[in-house]
Length: 82
Image (cartoon, rainbow, N blue to C red; front, side, top):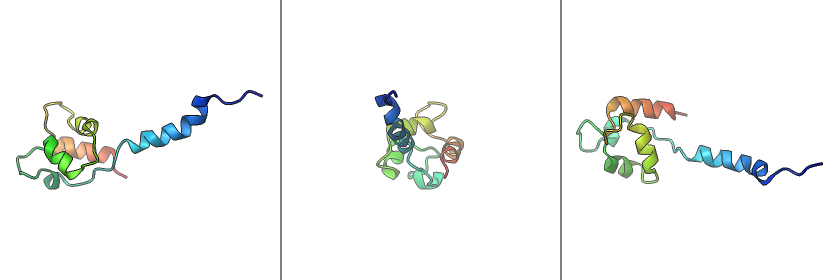
């Protein structure tokens, strides 16, 4: 009988780590847009979610203009809603 490869034995751990990559971001747009500019800037996102990575912010900024608009935020939080 062949022994499972190391990769095969690590799959459950890799799956758990992949799920842990996306913390739940559920605050309302207005709660994150602290300066009421109508967009969420990286600084505001990071202040609201200190554990968040730049990757999370970039995923929310769908049009890649550097800010997250209300529609982008709604789509982002719906994508990861529990």
